Structure formats: structure tokens, C-alpha cells
Amino acid sequence: MKKFPYTPLQIAIIIYAWSGIVLLIFDLLTGNISPNPIQDLEQRTGRHAITLLVLSLLCTPIHTIFKWSEPLKRRRALGLYALLYATIHVIIYMDLDYGLAWSSIYENILEKPRLIVGAFAFLLMIPLGITSFDIWKKRLGKNWKRLHQLVYLIVPLVVLHYVWSKKGDLLSLQGEVLKPMIYGLIVVIFLIFRIPPIKKAIASFSSRYLSPRKKQDPQPEQS
Image 1: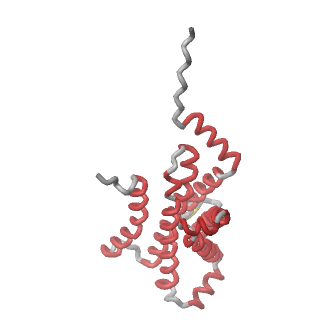
Image 2 (image 1 turned 90 degrees about the vertical axis):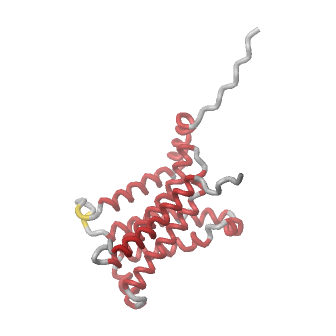
């Protein structure tokens, strides 16, 4: 009997990743879309991309705390799905919103810092997506890890882009800033976990209190 090729975590990732596109298509077909459909499509694909990126950051803390290795194997899938949605997000902006009018797109990006940040983050994601496969890991050697550490710059930039895209005052917590702030707080926590002393302390705590304890060897009987 053949073993099922997918683990529960893989299935959960696949279902969640594709749910964004499935729900978008369903809402478009049923007319359950906002009066500004292009803006709605941009926001929903962008939000799904951010969520997938944040989930990819979650993999390492889960492994550190619970000694569960499988999430480390799923980071690539989460990152590639995030790149997929970011690409759709950018295509909607350039094509549906601006009709591929490159001069207008260029001017609009330069006028709005949030678009500069978003464009920079997207451009950084492309080489990470291209080199995410094992063949590039072998070719680049140690440089592969250095390159993919750019994710720790990309994710804060993407969250900043998200914050600036929402209407409201961040300092007074007015408007649509609560959700971006939650994303930002989660990212800050995950990045703090990457600080070597903190990561070491968490790993030590996990090994002592959360990981299954090894059975002690039976004591020899006294004669």
C-alpha cells in the first residue's frame, strides 16, 4: 500500500495558499465584490502575500520552540506562494489599474513612498524565488544562505508598504491601522526570536521544559 504523499501540514498550506484565488474567483462570479473591484483585488492579493510571508517567518520559531523540523521544509513553499500573490498584486496594479501605461506607473511610484517601498520589496523577492530550488542552493553554496537572509529585510518592507496603504493615523490609532499594526507586531516578535542570545535562550528553555525528556538509564542494582 502506497504511503500518502502529502503530510497534514502540506495539505493545510496548499488549501490556505489557493484559498485566496478561489475566494476571489467565487466573489467575482457571485458579484460579492466591493464597488471598487480593482482596489479590492489589489488589497486582497497583497494581504494574502503578506500573510504567507509572515507564515514563512513563523517556521523557524516553531522549530526552535517545539523541535518540530517539518515547518523548515515548508518555508520554500510558503515563500513561493507569497511571490505568486505578490506578482498577481503587481500585475493588477500595472495592468487593470493603469493599463500598462508605463510613464504613469513610473510617475505614480515616484510620488508615493509606499509604492517605492512595495516595489523594492517585490524586486528583492524575485531572486529569492528564482534561487529557492535545490540546484541553486548547490551552485551558490554559502552565498545562498546570505541571499535568502534578505527575507528579514523584505518582510518589514512589505508590512511598511501595507501600513502606508491604509487610511488612518498610526500614532492616534485611528482609521484602518489595527490590522497592519498586528502584522507589524508579529513580524517584530519573529525577528526578535532571530537575535542569537534570545534564540539560544528559547532553544534552551524548549529543550528543558517542552521537548520530550529522554528516559533515564536504569540504575545498576547494588550488590
